[in-house]
Image 1: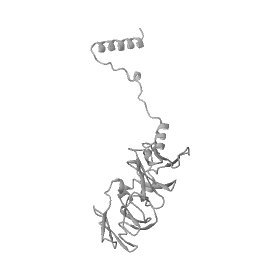
Image 2: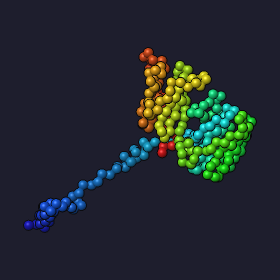
Image 3: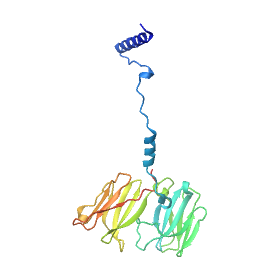
Image 4: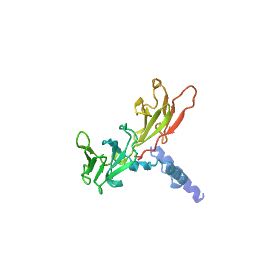
Length: 249
């Protein structure tokens, strides 16, 4: 009997004995199945399809109306220099939730803690402390203080991006997208009156009673779109992409 045959017979005998004892035989490494590995091409593909934050997130934040047709966009991101208040011009009928990326009038940060705009005095309070805030004086109703978002929160990092698009019949769709997913509401293109309700992940379509079609396509996907039809009667619907979020996690 050859050496190979004797070795094979010994392995078979050991396997039978172990099985009889209720024990699993451990075979030589050469006979074990190799564990699956992720190919280099698949790794590159996964990296390529990973979502990227919207560059506009650097200028996004929590927008608050401070008077005189201005908003303060409040941020607090240590990776971007810490507490900031971007003072921007907005339309007269601006409301919370509307786009705010208008003309920049002033920027307050640790290096520039005061500014004056349209008769208002603005000061960044406690810029190096744990509770930075924006102090506004000169407006009707007296001085007001607006706390900046806490570090690490979506508002502090500018995670939610807001855009608006004319969709026909005198209607503007205001689209936003952030960590909680896409959302849209509708307003009159003239006076800004909001109507018809909101669509989001929980309620991706407007009810028929709204009088027009509005539906989020792929609300849980990486590239959601808003599908609208303001005319009906066989008129083709249009789609508008939502902005990418300002941060991805």
